[in-house]
Length: 125
Image (tube, rainbow, N blue to C red):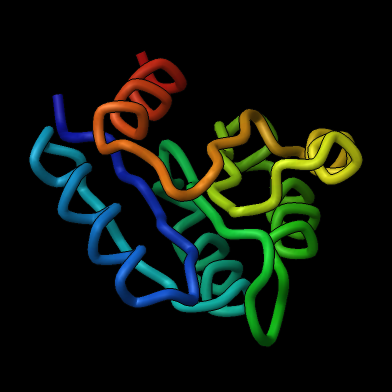
């Protein structure tokens, strides 16, 4: 069985590096996008072999995470794909909008690496 494929969509280089390093240590295959538009383009381009999980920030340039998620959820290949919102936003109103847009779960930054692995592993296995 091949390693689960994960797409990280995050405008902060340091957060992308941290997330990729953390998830790669437990043998996940990780691709990166620096904003929602690039993330959407990558997801659509991979629809024949879709990502197993998408991890995204909320606030990004060019396209925010919620807009990206709405477009991704319109793709048949991603209707049931787990999507983790990784953000500093923790308000219930944001979470409600996120879940209505297709967010599977919410992980607030800063996060512990073990918490990230636990959330991702719990969504995939």
